[in-house]
Amino acid sequence: MTNTEISNLEQQIFELTAKLNELRKTSKRTQVRNHGFSTLNGAITLLDMFGDKDKLLLIHNMGQACRYCTLWADGFNGFLAHLESVLSVVLVSKDSPEVQRKFANSRGWRFCLASHGGGDYIKEQTVMDGSDNMPGAVFYERDGDTIYRKNSCVFGPGDLYCSMWNLLGLAGMTESDWTPQYTYWTRPEKMDDGGANLND
Image (cartoon, rainbow, N blue to C red; front, top):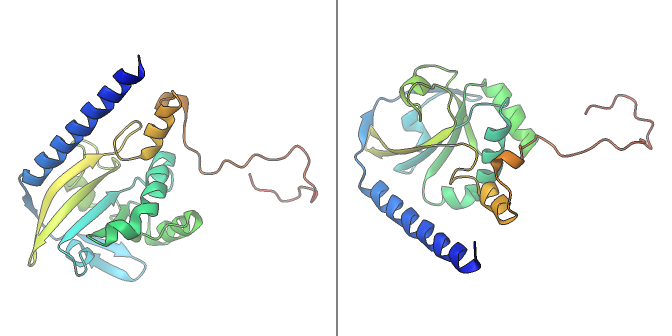
């Protein structure tokens, strides 16, 4: 494939993405109930998550046991201040609030966190029919105290929502060539401190 072919294909993808976003603007929204969640500060509701905004991006994270979900959240964390200038952002998972906070702190995440505990919310608001712990995101709008689901997406290797895949693509690599890890530190052959009590 020539550079011209690559540029032409990139332009097509750009135009299709613009078309996709136009369709999302006009997509039908559906009313949803005001689900409950747990946080370190107590119980909250979906409506509470909007704060002073009318738009809410709820990130569906599988929990600390998923390296891929960690990769997506690591990336979104860098955009968080920009996103929060126009909408509320909350990361939810099945993990307990205590586990969520400990893991978020270890990653340097700044998200508001809430636990659905694997309950009704994730079963009813899944991003993929038939799967109640699929990673993705749901965009909600509110009108007064009424909540509407507007758009959703599924996260997965090679998707549109993690810039890592496109950057690997520049190097001629695909998601089959690389798997995210929690850390990339490699133990030295010789530990100058003696190596006692070392956690990998």
